[in-house]
Each structure stands twice: as C-alpha cells, then as structure tokens.
Amino acid sequence: MNKNYAHCLEMLLEHEGGFVNHRDDPGGITNLGVTKRVYEEWVEREVSEQEMRDLTKEDVAPIYKNNYWDRCKCNSLDSGLDFSVFDWAVNSGTGRSAKALQTIVGADADGAIGPATLALVNNNSTEDLIEKMYYARQEFYEGLSTFDTFGRGWTRRNNETREASLEMMD
Image (cartoon, rainbow, N blue to C red; front, side, top):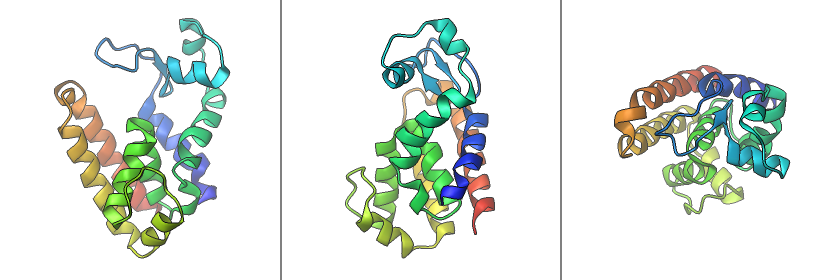
C-alpha cells in the first residue's frame, strides 16, 4: 500500500548500498542502486562519475517511485508483497518481477500488472505469494551465468527480502 513506499525504499537502499563500479557488473557505475545510464535518462543529460558518487537518497527516490514502485502497481499490493515485488523489480527489472507474480497467480505473464492480475493476486494468500516470489527469484538467480560471482549476495538479499516482507504483512 502507498503507506509502505518510504519504508520499502529505506530497506531497498540498504540492499543497494553506495557507489560501485564492479568490472563484472554489466550495469557499470552505480550508486544507491541507480546505474549511470538510468540516472542520465532521468536527468536527460550525461553525468560524470563524480555526480554519480554524489547521489543522495533524495536524488534517487523519485526514480524508484516512478520507474519501479508505480510501474509494478505496488500501491495496490498487500503489505509485504509490495516489497517483494519492488525489490526484485529494482534488482532484475520490472518486467521480470511482474511476470513472476503473474505466473504465480495464473495471469497472462505480459509484464504489465493491471486489473486482471490484481484480481488474481487478491484471491491468494499474501504469505503464499511472498514465499512463491522468493522461490521464483532464487531459481532465476541460480540460473544466471554470473551466479558464481554475485550469487552469495543475491541469495542474502533474497532471504532478507522474504523475511522483511513476511514481517510487514498486515
């Protein structure tokens, strides 16, 4: 629900961390989980490495709200499920997170959460959906060629997201 965005953003930013430029990360220069490419699209200009290093929560919060939270209709999801969907959307793309949720509830997995998907979501237990999102996400990670490099961190993040999501349930 909408009341959860600020709390979910705080938890998300703990996962995302600060400035990184890992040679094996296809995202390249990233700060607070926002890649240089995404930030440049947001501000509609090229940015320097120093600008990326200087990003603040206030700089990235509207990006997360617009590009991930709103796109995945997290305001329409129950507490806990909203964070599961949001965190995976940020980590692996809104389409992947949305399609996973749609597949779990038996909706057409087109990557766009709409009224039909939300109706099916509402016919399921929030706890069951959180658990199924957790397992789908872990299976996705383990199938990636970079799992040997990043898998431990992804698994930790997935575990933490599941735990936090279950604690948030109304």
